[in-house]
Image 1 (cartoon, rainbow, N blue to C red):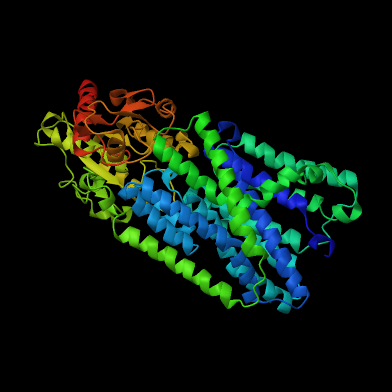
Image 2: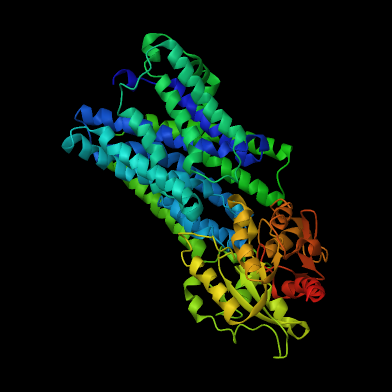
Length: 626
């Protein structure tokens, strides 16, 4: 494999092809709608480069775990912790306490290389949007570092005891990981995106190329064809993919194979003196330069974008996009020249001189993260800031009617979950859904004497009223929803009010709700489907603080396309559709405060007063129907 160990400028160019779309996609340039696939290309490159290096050491008899981590630390740590330092300073300056508290926790997890697990666990049902998390991008570094824990040991075992049967050992893992990733697209999309088991196949595709040096295309026309096909697969997905598509799974196959094709097509090119198109394109000095700074550019670009968004509180315009791209490139150039290069080029024979400072950097970063998290984001920085509402106040007003865990559905008590007054109503109605159904309950309860029917609340966190809904992250939603059908029959429910955070299910397609609507229609049950209510990029109390108090007509853009409710309405059969955005919004610009009262208690759930104000027009609508 001597030819494969020579410097590959085209691989550095491939790094540029990976990082540039990521930066432009994150900056908001919609033409690069699939720019996120650059991360998948990075995974293939990492798998290839690391495995190639490990294999060289094994074949030369110089394999050492400590040497491997010594090299990894010198490569990864300087720029990473430099970016932590800059981001912490900016976060202290920009972020209000709730955001700084979350940032602190994410920094501690990033320093321990488990941020992918942290974001998987925390970017969930009740969290504000991830676009304002400055270290969100470190999830991919954590995936790679976790790979680096297992791969050296696995390669040593295979090389020494299994007689180098690389294909026999690696291909089954690749296939299993890929199948798991495809299977979990709908079942556990967050885990599928963030965790190593469903990303391992991407890294191992690069590894399988590294351990098969005979995987070479001999003829120039073949190299041209394979390299060009690789470029088409990567560039095509960058422009054709959308962030709403299910991913990774089969969607990641095209860019990953594109990276593999380019790496294979460039094998032996330098020694042959024959330079196919893809190799020449990716080996141009400006392209290679972006590949060289790609690591630093990846590290700094996302915090720059986040702080710009946090300062603007609106989608970035083209001037803002240009500013963040230029700032990111300049910072990356500085980091590469003065942070990365000195530590990589300096010869340090004593490994302790590297390991001890590295450990100290981890301890300091985790300590600062813990300090910020346990101190509530240092709220003394903003003594006049206070969040005036809490969703917990709404969701826990009736503990057994809004279940934080769907497995407790058996504890639901109809008598305790009745929101209406009196026993002389003609019909029973069920409010069924997740927290975006539960947030209407305080409004119905406050207006209970006006209800023309007996209303029962049956809601659970994260569980939409979709009978076909399945999720490994929320495994009891199916039982929770099946129990709703029993309640409908036992309580002689005449009509059902359905609501959910529909933005979570847009990528799956809204036809899934038909499983519920068809059942209701087949059993003669009337229904009202409530559309998506307003959601914002952050907690509205922070919007209010950042904009300035005293504005009685505060409005802001929601973060999703208003057409979502038109799509929902299109699946309705004989039931009715109610659009809550008609009450507070003009297009995607919605009112989040009314006469000094916040309508929401976080980024989207109604506050008690907001629920009351929002239920009034809904109640008028229901009076006309019943």
